[in-house]
Structures are given as structure tokens and as C-alpha cells.
Length: 201
Image 1 (spheres, rainbow, N blue to C red):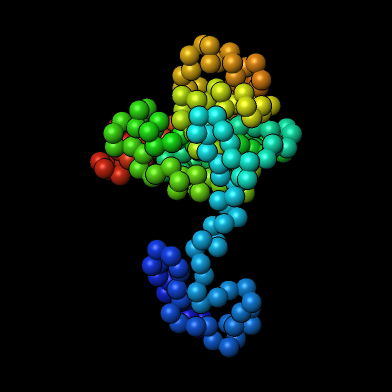
Image 2: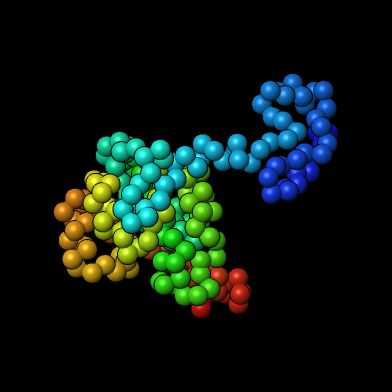
């Protein structure tokens, strides 16, 4: 029976204490006893940018292909509701841009105990998904300016997303807004409540 190696993390590397048997080592060029986490994440991190007051770093951002869809949100504790949004937005898109609200934005919107997962990790999770082309970390208050700068064809928003009318009009000037209904029970808040109390409240 093939042994299943134990994998431990030291913050910089993943180490596999037990080397594979000769039979298991036939594909040794595809795996290593010691793999750099930075190496594993490098390709994913290249698809993540930030929006610090209106400047996307050129080394990590290229104009997306067309048609381009955009989704936005906290994406805190990724769940089926988030995935449904991403699947819907990517259906007929050549590129999908996911805007992740930064930690300060999530605290303003959700309260002092949120986010559960910090912004860099939330962005990495989204960037690792096959459907996403680019991930941008941004302040939610800058959303309309960011969307105008990107110029997507479609912007997918939850019907519960509140935007001041001037910002909504600003977005509508460059993209069609598509509103999606949230799946019942598919919210990070409901997941947290079930975890704490054993049922949804």
C-alpha cells in the first residue's frame, strides 16, 4: 500500500519527511521533498493587483480580453453563494475581474469582527480559481472609479448591493449592471452564525 506522506508547514516551505519509494519516484521530476511556497504562489500572485487611490501596477495588470465581466465583494470565507456569482459572471466572458474589498472596507460594512480572512489571503483564494482572470484588492468606496478605469462589459452585483445613485450612473455609463439574487443561507454571516450557534438565525 502506498504511504501517504505527512506534510508540515514552517511558514516558508512545505516539507515531506518521508521520501517516496522507488516506484513512487518515477515521476520525481514533478514533485520535490521540499517545495517553496513562494514558488507555488508566484503565478497566482501575478494575477493580483491593488487599487491604491487609482493606480494599478503595470507589472501585475494588463487590459482584460473581451467580453469582460466584473464581480465585487468581500469574498470572506468563500462559500457556494460566492461561487455561484463567479460561475454566472464567467459564463460568456473571455475575462473575469474579481474586485476584493480590502480589510478596512469590510470592517466598515460588516463590523469590527470582520473580515475573518485578511485581504491578501482572500485575493489569493480567488486568484487560484480557474474562472478568474484578474483579482484586484480595493476600497469599496472607490468601486465606481475602478470600474470606469477597467471598463468591463458587464458588472455583476447582488440585489442587496447599495450604491449611491451618482455612482450607479457612473458604472452604467461604461458597463451593463446585472443583478443577481443571493441563494438562501449562502452568506458568510449565516456561516458564522451556524458555526457559533449550531443553526442559522
